[in-house]
Amino acid sequence: MADGFKRGEFVDIAIKGVRVAAEHKGLVSIVADHPDGEPAHYAMPPQAKVTRVAPAEWPPRAGDLWRDCENDVWFAVEDSDGEITMVCQVDACPSRSPSELIRTLSPLAFVYREDEQDGENRG
Image (cartoon, rainbow, N blue to C red; front, side, top):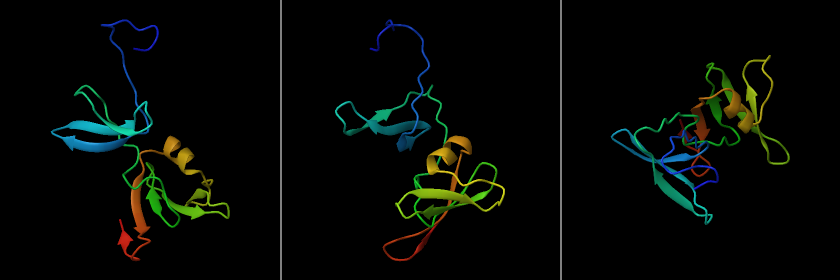
């Protein structure tokens, strides 16, 4: 156990930035890093509050379209260094990094992605 906690104490635990591995009858399993560095599956108890931040298609790829919590559409653009920047359809809205977008305007909804392998549209 972490230092300073005693067995039997009631605590709230927040785990941010993990992916859903499965959902069954309202119970969620997540994938997170294990102390040995490998991904591991963890079952969440019924008391766990799970909040959707972004869909499974996260992170954005160049050419993607995403919609924020205010219903604005964002276009993912790749710069010359290979970094992705999110550009909003609204002129007054500043461009943001994907991490800034997810932190400030979640939940995000995936709208469109052109599949690299066969040119098919996804979304």
